[in-house]
Amino acid sequence: MSRATREQVPVERTWNLQDLFASEEEWEKKLAEVEEMLEGVTAYKGALQRGAKELLGCLEAEEALTVRLLQVYAYASLHLSADGTNSLNQERVARVGDLASRINASLSFIRSEILDLPDGTVTAWIDQEPGLAPYRKKLNDLLETKPYRLSQETESALAALGEVFGAPYTIYNRGKLSDMTFDPVQDSRGEERPVSFALYETDYEMSPDAKLRRDAYASFTQTLRAYENTFAAAYATEVKKQTVLSRLRGYESVTDMLLQPQQVTREMYHNILEIIGTELAVHMRRFARLKARVLGLEKLSFCDLKVPLDHDFSPPVTIEEAGKQILSALQVMGEEYAGIMKQALENRWIDYVDNVGKSTGAFCNSTYGTHSFILITWADNMRSAFTLAHELGHAGHFMLAGKYQKYTNFRPSLYFIEAPSTLNELLLAQHITSQSDDPRLKRWVILQLMNTYYHNFVTHLLEARLQRLVYDAADKDVPITAKRLSEWKGKVLSDFWGDAVDLDAGASLTWMRQPHYYMGLYPYTYAAGLTASTAVASAIQREGEPAVERWLEVLKAGGSKTPLELMKQAGVDMSQHEPIREAVAYVGNLVDQLEQMF
Image 1 (cartoon, rainbow, N blue to C red):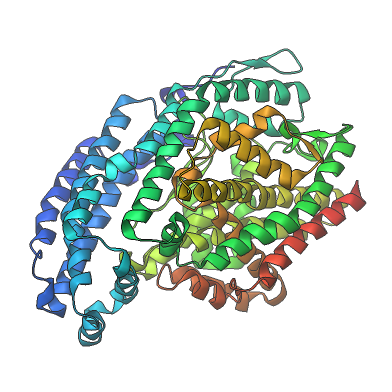
Image 2 (cartoon, helix red, strand yellow; image 1 turned 180 degrees about the vertical axis):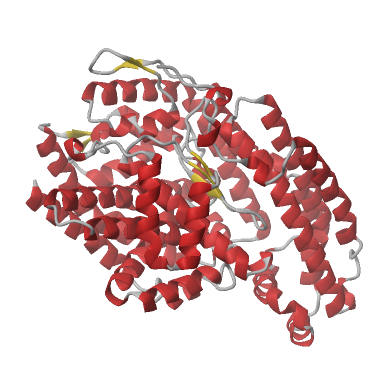
């Protein structure tokens, strides 16, 4: 076995980026149009103090430019995600990145001129000019940043450095997807298997074949170790960037700066980290000990954490079978939502195949004005089906938001983003269980749910706890090195798992595996989203259509409300401890059931 190149994979298993632009020539034409549109926005420079009509005209022109820029960027970035080794793909992203930096620098006057207006002016203009109503939240959010804004010249200079500021993430991705190579391994039958980030994380890490699983882990961590200092330097630069910017702007801490655009309080942030990080640990240690007992191990090793407990009852799942199951499960969401799912599955919105240079993990790219694009690496197992349902949840959310909201209110806070996606996973689990009385099937579904909660409440939550240590250290000017990152990650893992899991040196390198560290305070939002979706899934089970209708209205609202308002509209108050504790208790109940079943 060897990994295919992008040219060798079946086209029908890839996404169709011609839906964005029919040809390279069309993309080039639209890229040139973006530059032309810039003049229509910069014409308002120095004019925003004149009145509401000038402000409205400027915001509408800016919005049109931004939408077109994001579309040409999506085409470039999706090509790069499909094959990061291709030099043309790298060049496209570099070109759009350079253009975006110039545009951001040129448009920085908009925010500066609005913030220079006398207090109360913007509010009065919104009341006077009906066309400004959709921009109310955007403008009010901008006014809240006024104490932290720098001079117009400084803001312009910072915006011009946008591509440079993105360099740590670019370097991380290039190293991970283009330069890293892993030694092949043999499975228990003596067959040679190639190793890659995608193959390890979507297949071998969950393989019941102990030899394959452990040898792949050894190959994987050996290569990680070879890159640890380079990756640490890239991450340290990202952290330094955020720390310096927070100080330049006058924030009390880098954490405060990163939480502000999420519209999340420190208390909401720490509630997630503390309640789940401490109270869930008891249940997950029980789960680890159960897994060790069932697998016949004295103690579970770190590389055994994702091995299935019931692998004999885990038949291969094809893409077509998974699609039918997901469509059936999501009929409860109504015709409009289910229709979006059907389009995605039938019209090549999804890239399933593994190939050299393909981005790891899974994501849904939702660009305003076009349909969503989903990347996963299909592994012929039910975990892939749940991952697909998850990403389709993002697609359903943003397709509805894009239909019912202007671009300015399209995207909600990161704090809310993972709720629609995880709800789809929970609905899939409910549906499968409802279709059968087979106790073994129920046990299997519980194990799939445990995978979902592990991903969001353990993997990403522990990422977030490491992030908190890193940013606290950065605020104290403690240098970020590979040695410290591994020590901190080892401590985070040890505090959570206690003596239930054997944590080897390779476990401490887990900080190298996730790109989320380059996306601000993103990791903890997975746990926030799943907390909310756990409550919503329960409400849908109890109430049926009324709960579904509330949820659909929330999805259609996009980013027109704060995340707290959106979740309250769905019936979940995330300012309180109760939803978090109830979600943790739900996981504990799943473990209780598994202990009785095995």
